Image (cartoon, rainbow, N blue to C red; front, side, top):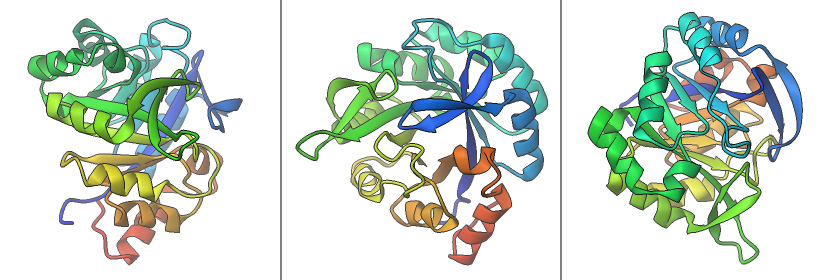
Length: 251
């Protein structure tokens, strides 16, 4: 791997505040998104991901003012997701200060929107956010609404299809591991890696530096976490030092 591994803090935002829970439930306040964004930028984060976690389930738009104020504070790429359904939604977010836009529920409802966004803005701005869990048979399925509803899609097939339609990268979030700090789902990462060539951002389950290393070993191009950064258990530097020590290039 010659391209530097990216380390990405994730801001899960609800009603203008950063929140964090376990498996997207029992959310607790983690601070102001603008302040946290500035802190992570100063700490050396490679990118920031801003997810309006109730935008799709509450059927409302992403909070553009918070996005704008966050974008003003950071000088690293900012990915924004939540409630994105149309090319116009992407246009508005990019104008508000986003560099890339994440789409999940909107793409499941109408997959062709992936191609429309990629054609208009380029694949590099489009991140497919895939919330994946194991079903009762142990197969990987795509979910929506914070992991509470099955989308009726097999996860590896969906990621492969999205890549073919024009997604620039995949934010692969294990709903089973989310917030548990028990490690990334490396089997899931390997399975998707075997079928797509676009970058994979591993998400869900980070608890130690070794977890980040394991995700990259499994095929992730970037590693994303929230709780361990928000509550001071690990710093960006801790993760980068661990990746560097394991032989992976970092910025």
